[in-house]
Amino acid sequence: MTVKELQDEIIRLKKEKDVCILAHAYQKQSILEVADYTGDSFGLSVQGRDAKNNNIMMCGVRFMAETCKVLSPNKRVYLPNPAAGCPMAEQMSVEELRELKKKHPDYAVVCYINTTVDLKTECDMCVTSSSAVRLVGKMKEDKILFIPDPNLGSFVADKLPEKEFVFYNGGCPVHYMVDEEKVLQAKKEHPNALLLVHPECKSEVVGLADYVGATTGIMDYAIKSDAKEFIIGTENSIVEHLQFDCPEKKFYPLSVKLSCANMRLVTLYDIYNTLSGKGGEEIILDKDVIEKSSVCINRMIEG
Image 1: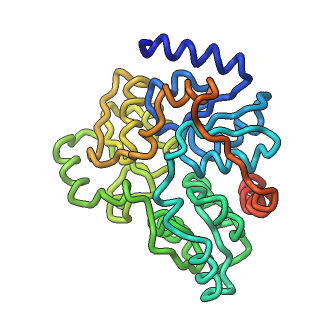
Image 2: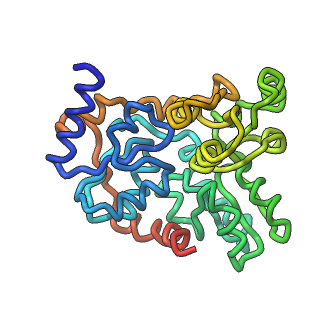
């Protein structure tokens, strides 16, 4: 089948099988075109929860599908490629978190949504890159243990000097690969371009940006801005999506290394095979895990 023929068959099957397809913004353009909703991990989980469909397919990585299942425990949730994980979400174990909590017993634990569902069972608050500053700022606790990304945590800490933070030595290995030298080189090559970066980047990169925000925030900023050129400091698929959204503007990747191999694992054929019952994985979580992890997730929603 051609790409168009495969897309048409996926669209036919998802209607026949009562499946809502969610696609993270880091997925390929061809996948976004067959999705019912696109966006960031949290927003997609909420869309899945509110969808009338009884079946949800999360085209992203495992922690996203887990979050979707927590918010939709009575629905069947599928991950089209079981190998699609997140190095940042998986770099910290529950045992490590428990040890950190013992060392800092008077600290509230805030987890980035990019964590496993098991880690979320041990946390007080869950945040996204777009909501972290606001939600942590509203917390009554003044001492925060922020996991797993110290870059996002430092970004939040800079905005909330009245609070005390402890960080885990983790982070996104993709965003971590970009440094100040790469930024200065990109600015030299594209002197008229604005630099838009994700807060998962190092502080030295964030400090040079014209805009810092979540994936959806970066896209919204570029779309609405009067500027005509942009250097994109997050996953390189966003460059392609913005080219489709704003063909009259120019978008440049900050680095060729800003490519998430795990996100790239998901293919149209993975989606097709999952819909056909020949592939994918249904996300099954224990009731106890769902109940415990939903505490910090629901606190995020209510915030």
